[in-house]
Image (cartoon, rainbow, N blue to C red; front, side, top):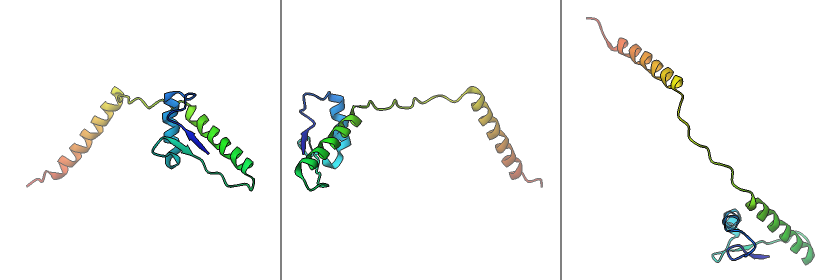
Length: 101
């Protein structure tokens, strides 16, 4: 079964782009999705299975992507605690290196 994902008038542009990414290696250079179904002995059942898989793929592509994580700043307290522990560690190492003579 072949479906032209790029030129399909029934698909919005964003869904079409996600569908093409989802298709992966099943997508040709021309933007046509090729679905091969050979599970059953009858051509009708294979066509129905291919159609079902295409519909499932389109439904998956129609879902909007999850929102991306927004980077947040560390809290003032966590920054202070980090700097304090670094200072303590630095002091420990400095005292080790000083040799009384």
